[in-house]
Length: 139
Image (cartoon, rainbow, N blue to C red; front, top):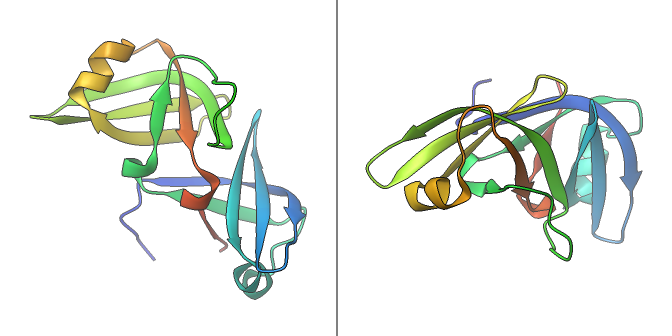
């Protein structure tokens, strides 16, 4: 199956924290961990458990960027990497961030944000993603 979500980050489930309605699934990708807040029904239906391979799926428009990790923010996922590509359009641009394991995080943000953050090839940056914006898939 092909989907339009640009971010399909493969890793291994390192933790599943069950709740009454939702649970939090942590997926280890090299030095980075991405967490997803999804329903317990989805966790059970997909058979998600520690050690299982999974894919974190995120739309590029749900990715924010910063120049360093941010303390005191509710976005649980802060993935550090190096900018490998910046393409500006008329109003918005696309930023590609390479993580330590070689995974690529795509983000779609305004040209103003690209410029004010100084996002350019070779610069360090952090992709910020709310755990509620992360879907989980298995093959």
